[in-house]
Amino acid sequence: MILITGGAGFIGANFLLDWLTQSDEEVINLDVLSYAGNLENLVSLNDDKRHIFAQGDICDSTLTARLLTKYQPRAIINFAAESHVDRSIQDPEEFIQTNIVGTFRLLETTRAYWSTLENKAKQNFRFIHISTDEVYGSLASEDEAFDEDHRYEPNSPYSASKAASDHLIRAYYHTYGLPVLTTNCSNNYGPYQFPEKLIPLIIVNALAGKLLPVYGDGQQIRDWLYVKDHCAAIRLVLEAGTPGETYNIGGRNEKPNIDIVHTVCALLDTLYPRADDKRYQQQITFVTDRPGHDRRYAINSKKIERELGWKPIETFETGIHKTVRWYLDNQIWVRNVQSGTYRKWIDKNHKERAL
Ligand code: NAD
Ligand code: TYD
Image (cartoon, rainbow, N blue to C red; front, side, top):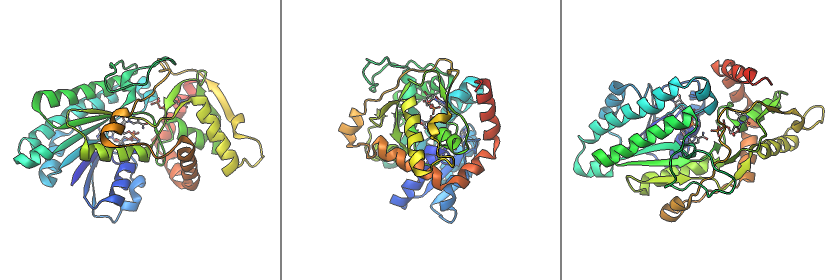
């Protein structure tokens, strides 16, 4: 079996659901269920014995050691993190705790467990750390996309905490020989994404008749990756990646934020027209920019394409269509998410932006 952390969050839940449609290998899912962890994402696995859920914190070494000894996983995939840049600006402490201390504790417990394994199991063991392109900092429009050798220049408390965790991962390979691999991916989108991130926030606000907040001039560029393409890349890295290596994963979809917002609005105009027949784009409003807002991210995925044969299947057009459709078909999920603490936080964030 494998152990994943953060499997009730956006990418972890997609990974888990996809994994169990393709394999019978059991998965232990360690998740603290922060505001971003939602077991409703996994409701289809309620009677599935292949999913073993453990509520707990990656900082809790006693718990993780117990899970490792009991279940003897062949691999760990670390999705658990505080993941939202805006939250990291308002309240960085939790990012240091989970992303840095949590990764460190998980590495230490894993190292102790790994050292007890027999030769073959030890050799075959893998620890995959899921990281972000944000560790590389911001690109100018003429710069080459980030490759794996790009220097680390994190600009937000979120990206700095992820960068620190990446360095710990690297150190555990070089110092202890722990078979770790790191993936640095670009912005994911797709089903089950918490509506604090750009794409689901725009869909949900549009349907609720609210304003659609675009930070600054809306010309910041992200490289959008459909979450299921990302999950396929992680499966490949697990099975065929080389320990000690890093793989960058991007969607080949560089787009300015304002274009993303217009695309979502246009799709909604077709799939779910406003009752008054006006267009959703009239809800767009430009708001105060995010402090230290990175201008552009872009990923060079050539290494994983060349070495592991991965390529994204979705274009932005197909992926965004599926995503908007999913949110339209899952409005109960959205309502349930919104009734939690998330609502209070998002109100605060956007009030301070003087909408
Ligand atoms: P998310 O915020 O949706 O989910 C994070 C999950 O981790 C939640 O289920 C939460 O309950 C859990 N968690 C948080 N702290 C924990 C702790 N201390 N112990 C155990 N569980 C804990 O995040 P996501 O978007 O699914 O991101 C997953 C990973 O991918 C993160 O490491 C993130 O940095 C990375 N990443 C995400 C994106 C993106 O666009 N979403 C892009 C690049 C990298
Ligand atoms: P986000 O989804 O928060 O991801 P990240 O900061 O990790 O890239 O934001 C994506 C882009 O959209 C980013 O440039 C900030 C911008 N943005 C807005 O313009 N309005 C919003 O309400 C949000 C949440 C983000």
